[in-house]
Amino acid sequence: MMRRVDRIQHSLSGSLVARQLGSRAFMLPRSSIVSRAQYSQAAAVAAPVPAEPFPPSNGLDEFWRKVPMWKDVSMEDFISWDWSKKNVVEHHRRSAPEKLKGILTSVIPDHVPLNRTASLLQSREEFIKDIFGGIEVSSMSLRIMPHVFSRINWQDPRHDPIFRQFIPLNSLMQPDHPKSELDSLHENDDSPVSNLVHRYPDKALFLPISVCPTYCLYCTRSYAVGADTSEVTKQQMKPTLKKWEAAFRYIEATPQITDIVVSGGDAYYLSPEQLAYIGERLIKIPNVKKFRIASKGLGVAPNRILDPNDQWSDALLWVHRLALKEGKRAALHTHINHPSEISWMTEQACRKLIEGGMTIRNQSVLLNGINDSAETISKLIRSLAEDLRINPYYVYQCDMVEKVEHLRTPLQSIIDIEAQLRGSIAGFDMPQFIVDLPQGGGKRLAGSYLSYDRNTGVSRFTAPAISGNDNGTKVNKVYEYYDPLPPTTAKMGHSG
Image 1 (tube, rainbow, N blue to C red):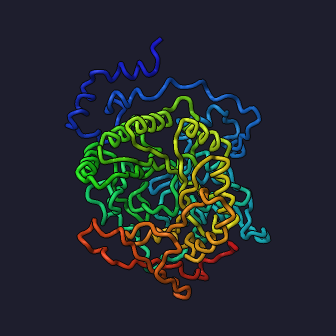
Image 2: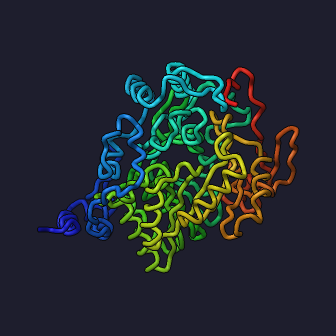
Image 3: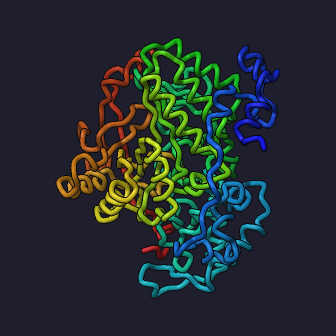
């Protein structure tokens, strides 16, 4: 019987499409999905033969069975990436509301706590209405993978740190700060070609895709990621080989670029062949010495890494090995904000990648009412470093994007948390606490401000290295970050 890799190799060997890829002389299909046949043979056969099916639970927590619609879902099915994609919980502008209402009705009890002491309750119907009101004014459509949906405490969703990251409540929303913007980091201003941002002298951000497995409410790229909403018509960033190759040619023609971040969207939504092709292509560019694959997958759908019938992790490890062989470095950058997101699947997925040699770093975002305490960030750092063996790389101040005012914290919060943690955690496990400056100033240490007026909430920063890519308009520029405004009484509700 022909092995899987042999079948792939046989189907591609000498094919017309493979020869077309070599000449770069074709456009992608209108579906914008790059097909398996459009990649180099080396990338397509990179993955080994799938392992045996994932073993029975053997006492492992089958936490998804607490969700009524998944109470009979087996371990084998829940591990399956195909099953996850078919069962994603989503809602966008063209969705029928009845489907989401049915799902919410099945998981939300008759009454939910309206305040943290549970002395006030809200009916299920009122809570669902609040959710749909939040969706109506959010800049992100709703999309949640089964793994992370199952991690929510549905007995008290309003105060659950996972729920608050991905499902909007109209009662918690606040008016946008006057200085907030949809593209707060001005990525479009630093984009010399489509799907590429070149802000730092030696680093570029490659955005090959605009889809994620789960959409964060506070997404810094809400101007382009996901489906259109009632508030935002998204900038198109669909994957076409023509756009990808334009980005690669720019990188090749700019020798000072040595470092690439592959993000989106989320690299998790690249097919294994796409991921392998991008990695192989970057490795072949002489001036590129290192690159990172950015994905929230480990936090929201780690089951894909464990699925014996999916090759994404195999392609990732193959890219890593190829980079090492060529004297270069590849890493995975993931995004986990709260310890509750971490399950035994997360641990096993990290183990598989790390024992395969992969370096993994985590980037968190400090979010109001979710993880904005030294106790929570300390627990998260220790879970990442000690249980998952992930480097706790960054903790970001929440960007000044529109529709996330209720999730932002004052700059003082991130400064205080760092001060409390410094010395209580080994230095090599301490993340950097970062502000990504509005208007494209790049990343600066939160405590490195020129000035910070705590009364007005205005902090001022300089970014000496960010000066060479925009005809000099950033030379000696002073960037300002603004703390969130005090909550309006109309929106404060009973969330305390």
